[in-house]
Length: 142
Length: 144
Image (cartoon, rainbow over all chains, first blue to last red; front, side, top):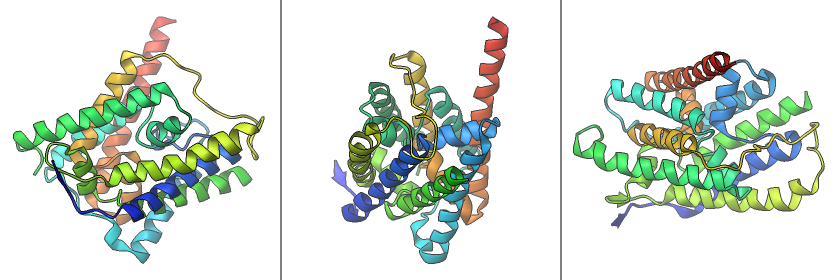
């Protein structure tokens, strides 16, 4: 296995901000900062105001990032538009079936020492790792 | 109102954290899943940073409270059982995640770039989410 070039200080700092964001939402509002849960429940009309506010914060943070540091947004990896749509659909479907995504399970659930979140996290990382190998071999990823 | 403002602030910090942590670069995310090729450990450090802060905040600060500062109760999952649904759903998510390098947070944040790819991915993701909700509603009305 080879290692890619990476900046672990930025990664730790960025991660710490994700932790801070989740801590704020739980401490003040009693809510889990899980993007799939917040977005998915908002889409079906459950307690829209705080959820729309959080998603709005994500977007405003995104716009601010473009204004200040557009290089933070990397180019898409998936070159096929059809596979991009398939990927989006599977992410939406799978996170609702599995009750969470990288943030809800990976940062919030693991921080609460939830066994369910540990199992979910291992499952999506494992499935992702297998998918990268298979997708490369059949030309679905560059 | 206070609750929604805090929610907004939390969302904005989340987006900035994703950017600084390199999580808005799909190549890094796919690289993290590429254990058998050139592995990119960035996501592991992001998760470590997030967990360090959140473990402290949850166990030392939040857990001491009966109720949240601005709300009437903590909304925490009550389930403890390990189910096939949990494992398979997460695996389906993992397949989609690896094919594009976007999980829900980075995908929604990337909508700010107003590119067709970002809108298409989030649109398809929304369809996937609503599809499951509709299926669950249909299932619960069929069994009652």
